[in-house]
Image (cartoon, rainbow, N blue to C red; front, top):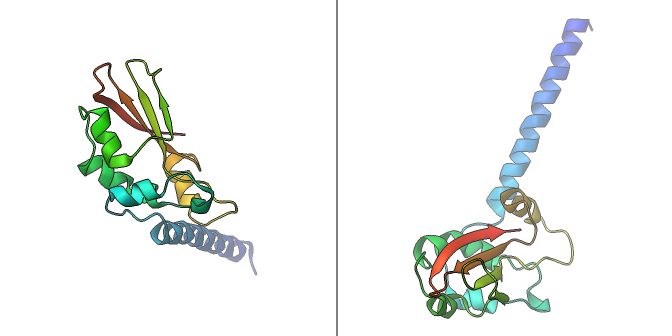
Amino acid sequence: MTHGTLSARRKQITIAQICLAIAGFVAIDLLTLRDAPFQSKSWMNSRDSMFNRGDTTRVCMLNDLLRHHIHLGDKEQAVQNILGEPSVSDGTGENGPLDRYPLVYGPSSFKLWLIPLGLRYRSFQPELELEYGKDYRLINIKVVR
C-alpha cells in the first residue's frame, strides 16, 4: 500500500469511529429519559426511599411540570399540594423560603440512563429548587446540581 492509500484508510476508520460514537449517544438518549406527562401522584410516590433508587420518574416529568403545572407567582402551599412536601425546606432563601425536590434518586450501580442525565444536567443527582418571596409566592425555579 502506498502512503496515500494508508492515509485515506485512516480517515475512513476515524470517520466510522466518530459516526459510531454519535450513533451510540443518540441511541442512549432515545432509549432513556423520555419526557412524560406530569402526574402529581407519581411524583409524590417517587419520594426518597431505598426502594426507589434509580427512579427517573421525576426527571422525565420535569418539562411538563414546568410548562403546565407550576408557574412564577404560585403560592408555596399550592405548589406543595401538587408536588408534596419538599425533601429540603429551608427559610434561608435570599427573599423567603427555599424548597428542593430531588429529580433522581441515584442508583446503587451504573445504569445507562446516567449518561444522558449527566450530559443534560452535569450531575447525577439534580434537584428542582423553588425559591419563594416573603409573601410565599414563587419567584425563581431552577435545576441545581
